[in-house]
Amino acid sequence: MTETSSPPALTDTAVVLTDPQREEVALLAGELGRVASGVVDSAEWLAAARDVSVRLPRRLRSAAREFRHHAGPDGVLLVRNLPVPEGLPATPTRPGSVQRTASPAAAAMAAVMLQLGEVIAYRSEKSGALVQDVVPVPGRERQQSNAGSVRLQLHTENAFHHHRPDYVGLLCVREDPTGDARLCTASIRRALPMLSRDARQALSEQRFMTEPPPSFGGSGSVPPPVHSILRGAPEDPDVLVDFASTHPLDDGARRAMEELRTAFGRATHALALSVGDLAVVDNRLTVHGRTSFAPRYDGTDRWLHRVYAVADHRRSRAGRPGGGSVLD
Image (cartoon, rainbow, N blue to C red; front, side, top):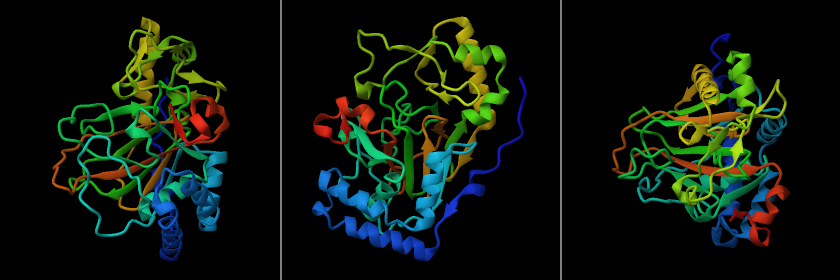
């Protein structure tokens, strides 16, 4: 197994909007606040958001289009200086917190994500809202979920689901006041050269199972389907793993999964998101997680918005009643 040198910082390839570009995005987001009473989840609002999306600053559209074509070695698009107004309310602390109305930040984020595909949500997660809050929740500190504050293990988002998002967008609207919380990402493109031939072979075989979380009903009496962790082109595979809920089915698979965990650890970026930073993770190539932090629950805690997008909306049509955006 060969180690690679440390990858360059994600900030080296960030798209930083100028202040005039930021104001341009803010004006477009303001338009969306006046559509359909600003209800984000309505079909009328989404149609307007698609129109606004193609009017984003050319530099931003170009970066999103290039990322969709080729996500690069790290599989993360970082956009900085998106509009987030001052005077936000206190960081939510209730379970299942979401954004139903088109705040400037939520509208701007949705417009950017629509440059990558169609936005989707899941009925069993956050009540099917398209723009969700990622905030610490009292009593859930130790959960391996967006509500926890212990170290969140690296994972493919909704790894258990047949219709996983292709892209996960995370927009910082309030920084962690402790400075400890960091978004962690690791790309299989960085990790693959560190894997032995035996590990690559085992990870490419159907020798693993991933359990759904309790919010999706758990696995119940039906065992999860068996799957491989690496799939697609052997020289540039996709990855499907959640180190908190993916289980190897034999000793060889267990060793391979531990080798992958080590490789991802060496390839991990840890990024402290600032207000207005949007990190878009290619969920096919890159796993993500979070460092631990200590919530205060005083209204000043870290607050992210989250939006999912898929490149092929048609593929999940059978699971979206009425052709909407929410998967049952």
